[in-house]
Image 1 (cartoon, one colour):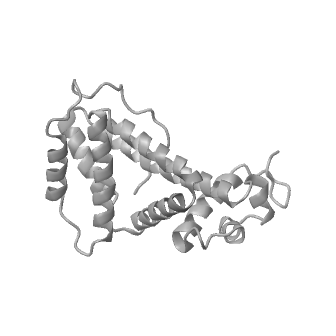
Image 2 (cartoon, one colour):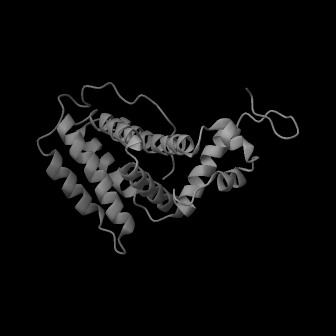
Image 3 (spheres, rainbow, N blue to C red):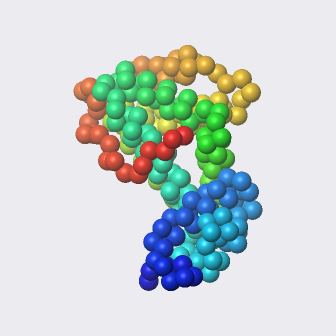
Length: 209
């Protein structure tokens, strides 16, 4: 079926608007404070559109958080895909830490959404598939330049340092980030200048975060 407005005009972007609105509501009110009525009002759609497009709140949350994760993975792919050697990959990792922890409103929104997703996954195991897939895709991008074990460590480092910087009143400087990356990657390069994988898959759109 094709969604229409109350006046009969086609509205092919309605589903996407609902997903974007859901993320806005989650960022403002948390998962616990998110309802079909709030999302519909934010998206500017009839309340009936919620059940037309999504089979319950869990389905909406799953699609919304998948969309959010796609933007973060796309950022990993963009930064790491541009690196031509391991040294540039190390710089890309540092860039990710500092990009994901900058203090503007858009990034604070991303920090809140990340914590809301992790809390949801901790409470509802069905959502852990989503967080596992997010981590897997992030590690794949890191493995373009580093071995799998190191990629796993770097993935945790990026997230941990980014969260700490985002929440600190006096965030650490880039020198500390660079030192931590150097320690982890000192003897962990993949063979060749850019690793075994040919490069990014191009999935998702890079978000300005």
